[in-house]
Length: 373
Image (cartoon, rainbow, N blue to C red):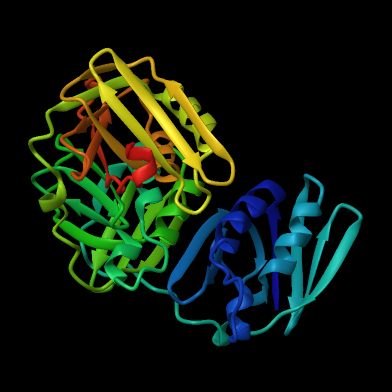
């Protein structure tokens, strides 16, 4: 027997969070369920795909305590359509009635014993990081996480805390993005490879205040705003990323970030659809962006930019470059280059003055002979 009353907006917020952990496909039927369990004057919701688990707690008026598993997607679908009112759950055994306003729905549930054991934080001390800092770091790094790369360690982002501050790094071998906040020192050292799913869930649902991060063994957890996200970490050693960051790039191109994105979008319409290759022709007082394909033709546009360095030509994957620029949060960018074969650094052209250091890196592509001529 279970019976409780919960506010609709609280319930919908909670289901929005836990439903994101439900697997899109699974051969294990119990993973499609959401666990509802009362605890004193609160209701706990939980869902998992065995790699990522989301648990959230919300206030409830509990008449008869208990626990039940309900079909996650169907429950979420029902609650989304309910009016803004109190929602009542009641039932015995595997039949649960959900009432709101003048409507009622009956779902077939199952016992809590069929649900996987929920993870716990253990006894480790948490790392405390402002939510807005972590969300910002995820935004500017997560695009560079590899997608199903055979090198498992590239399929997540490296997160580090300690005496040197807070750091996040992601790379797919073509691009790299690194955030360092040296002022955000922590007495607790943490070093973990975090899956993109866990990071994206946190960025999607976090609010204000601080997040408590605990890492022990192969598990990391994020606790914030009544919600906990547990995730398995990725085993292995992250590549030595500092070695690929050049230190002697002495050719600087500075320009408006949004303007560069618009130029790239226009020129990319004529780029080869399989390579997305664009070429920058750089010389003092004149910077030209050029793309061409044998089928469509070619495009050229001059950039309003400041360039200081040797004249040369360099090619980029336009899609990769635009994705880097779209995920930066500054007005002007500086591209630091050396030659057509060395990695290019992309930074905020001005020091933001808040202790935030962001560096992006992109590997150039080899120019085709037709573009070089």
